[in-house]
Image 1 (tube, rainbow, N blue to C red):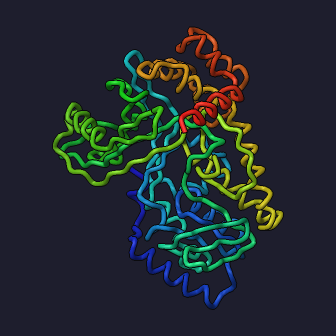
Image 2: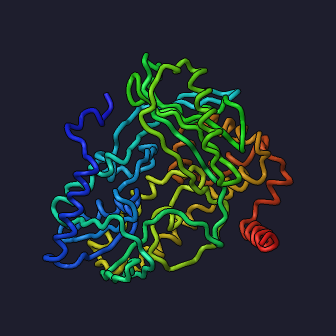
Image 3: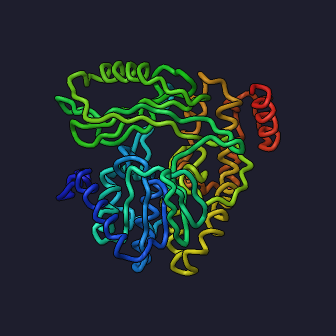
Amino acid sequence: MPIADLVAFSLTLSELHGSAKQARRATMHEKPADMIIVGAGLSGLLTAWRCLDVNPELCVMVIEASDHIAGDHTWSFNLTDVAEELRDWIQPFIAYQWDRYDVKFPKRERTLEIPYCTGNSDTLRACVQPHIESGRLRLMLNTQVSELTSESVTLKNDEVLEAACVLDARGFEPRGDEIPGWQKFVGRVIKTEKPHGLHHPVIMDATVEQIDGYRFLYLLPFSDTELLVEDTYFSDTSNLSENEISARIDDYIKDKGWSDHKVLRTEKGVLPMMMATDRDDDSSKIGLAGGFAVAATGFTVPCAVEIANKVAQTIRSEGIIALNVYVPKLRSEHIARERYPRLLNRMFFRAAEPQKRFIILQRFYGFKEGLIKRFYRNGLTRRDKARILIGKPPVPVSKALYNFSEKAFIKRERAARKQNQ
C-alpha cells in the first residue's frame, strides 16, 4: 500500500495561504526572523524544515514569488542515496516507496533491488506545515525580490528585510562559469479504467524511438490504476517541445493498452546536467541555483537533504553567522566531488552520437548492482571508475580524448560562445 494512502489528512492551498497570512501578521509582534530563505521549492523548504527541527529556538522566513509553496512537482531518488542517519527524518516527505525498479533497453532488461522513493509537493507542504502553524516558519507569498546579500533582502517595493543569514534557493539560471547538458521532460499522471499491470517503477524504458539525444519513458505506479508517465530526454538543448512530446506520450499510452484513462495532473521541467564548471563564488545560493545536484543523474533530493542537514547542524554548533562562510565552502567541496560525474557527462553529451547514447546506459546497467548503487550516491571507488571507462568503448576514442580535459573543454566552449555572440 502506498505510504501516502496512510496519511489521514491532506493540505489545501487555502489552508497554507491562511497559515501564511497568520505568520505574516505574527511578524509584527514577534522578533525578526533569524534566517531568510528566498525560494519555496525543494531545497528552500527542506532546508527550512531541517533547520527548524534541529534548532528549536530558530525562526525562519521564506519568501516566494508565486502564490503557493512547493510548486507542483514529483521528486524521486534511491533511498540508498540518502545518509542512513537521515532516512527516518526524510520519511514524511516520501509519498511512495518501492523495493525495486526496472530498466529496459533494446538489448537489456533488468530489475534492480534498490529501494526507490518519490515525494511530491503535497508531502513537502505537509512536512513544513507544523512549523508554519507554530509561527516559527513565516511565509511571504507573491513577493518579488530585486536584490539580496548574505544578510539582507530588497523587495521590488524597495522594502529591505534583514537577518543574520540569507540563503538564495531560487531555481537554476544559466551562468558563464557552468556548461551543462540538459534533462527535460513532460509528465502526465493518469488514472486507467483497468489495472495498468505495473507493480514497481520503470525508471528507464529506452526501447522507444531515440529522438533529441537519449530518450526514455519513466513510469511510476502509484496504485493499480494510477501512474505517472513521463517522457524524458537527455539533450544538447534546453528547448522543450511540449506539444510534440505530449503526442509521443499519447502514442506510448496507446501502445501499452492504457487508452481508457483520465489525466489527473501534468508536469514539465528542464534541469541542468553539468558537463564542466570552474565556478568559484562566495554567494549564499543553495539548490540548483547553487550548483547542488548530482551531475550524472540530475537528481536533486540527495543533495538537498545533505545540504539541509549540514546547514542545520552548522547553526546548532557554530551559529547562523557561520553560514555566510560555510555555504560557499560546501559548494567548493561539492564541485570537487562531482569532477568524475562531469567527465562522464562530457563523454555522454559530446563524445557519443546523439542517437546512440542509449548504448552507454545499456552497457552501464549491465554492471554489478553494488557499483550502480555507488554511482548514484557518488561513492565510486577508483576501481569502479576504471571499470566504467575501460572496456569496449561506447564512444569513439578520439572524441573521448578530445573531451577528457575539463579545463580545455571550458576554454573551447567559452571561445565558441564568444564567437556566436
